[in-house]
Length: 198
Image 1 (tube, helix red, strand yellow):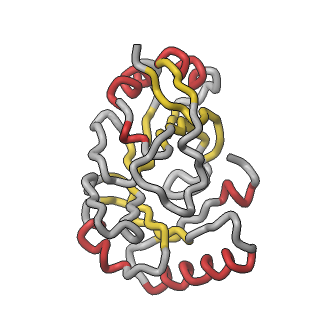
Image 2 (cartoon, helix red, strand yellow):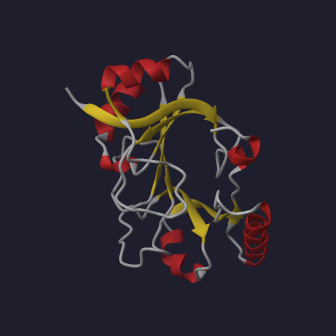
């Protein structure tokens, strides 16, 4: 019986990107093929859950939208879990670093590449709905080719939980200025963190 490494399954409001403000069930998988310093998930601590256990938890929320996140969710067998959830009319989204091609069963693909800190990483998922860049001071021209494969383009300030409000505020101001000067990009903020929700 297939089991999945699950950090948590919870019902919340999407706080960032195109679907900000829309309620979803988040399935946060364990494990990742990258180690970003700003990651807010301890993806090495998880429980092994069966497909039936995951499905039961998801259905208990009565929400028809699921986001696969992590860690790196594309490391998992998304075809199997996605097929099961779609039997219940659930729409599937993914938040991925783009280093693994995404199974076409996913309805909405958000790629947040980490090649600004891992220059040797190859982005394999070059098409999708949403490209979301965490800004660390990189030259945005590095995404000129990648942008063409995505419908929506976002820049998100680097938010470090162990930094002061003032330090993170400076990061927000920098990105706000960049967005004003960069046609085709929109600002994405992690509003769920301000609200104090997951």
